[in-house]
Image (tube, rainbow, N blue to C red; front, side, top):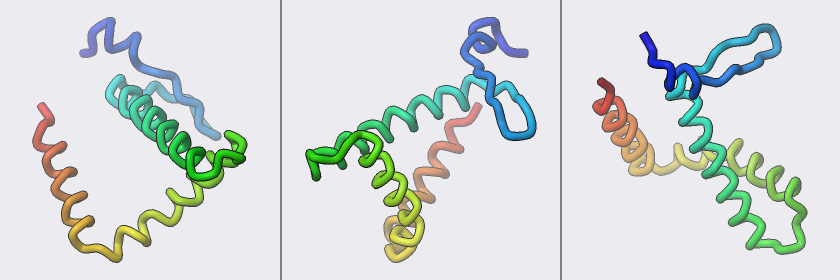
Length: 93
């Protein structure tokens, strides 16, 4: 059973075909991902100061789309990602 605080931190998520309640862990992870994506967009903006914000976001999305293929060319990076995944799973209660 979740606490009242956990329920408050949960978010309502609207999908194309349904509405769901996101658990607080998913809500927190989404907040972190958005924060890091915002930092990445800021970085892209430093590479071309004439980009408008929405254009930097488009560039970030293109980079993210190509990232899996890029990562797969480096077995050390893949091994590192797998190790991070395992470490995070190990922290589950």
